[in-house]
Amino acid sequence: MNENKLKYGLITLPNDNLRTKSKKVGIVTDEILEVVESMKKVLFKWESDREHEVGVALASIQINVPYKIVIIRKDIDDKDNHDFQVFINPSITKYEGDIVEDFEGCLSIKDIYGKVPRFSKVRIKATGLDGSPIRQTAKGFLARVFQHEIDHTEGKLFIDHIKDKEEAFFELMSDGKLKKLDYEADVEKNNILW
Image 1 (cartoon, one colour):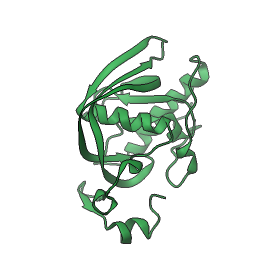
Image 2 (spheres, rainbow, N blue to C red; image 1 turned 90 degrees about the horizontal axis):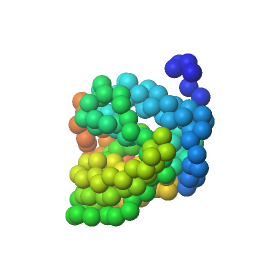
Image 3 (cartoon, rainbow, N blue to C red; image 1 turned 90 degrees about the vertical axis):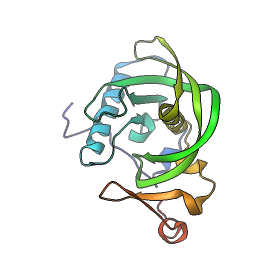
């Protein structure tokens, strides 16, 4: 596939398809393999002009393909690492630990970050591209990533978890720092998120 002409592209709010519940994948076909490769290319394209952001993970609904497919970078701290693990039909089997509030961003919500409460530990199950079962326990930031991406497969976004909207939204500035947004003036009035 020509990298300059992607078959799929990133969708962002206010696109209603982000609220679509994804379908289970029955078997891994050539179409599924193409979707996974396209997800990686879209993620790399997104991060290519973002000095201060790393594309850690992506759900296929974010490229407008409603399958339960999630990719997560194997080394989430290394932007130069292009190895991903693929999770087909991922689900969380157990939530554990404390609920911790921390910053989250999303490729499908441009330049907006929010303080989101998430469990500090989760157990997940999924299937790999080769059909093998995956069972994994994730802690800390990786647990947050799994919760965020699996939410996408259910048609949910990180903004849906934010209760105190007056204190929770931030904009990424060109220097890589986050600036607190005034919810009423910057977010609600400008219809940024809904």
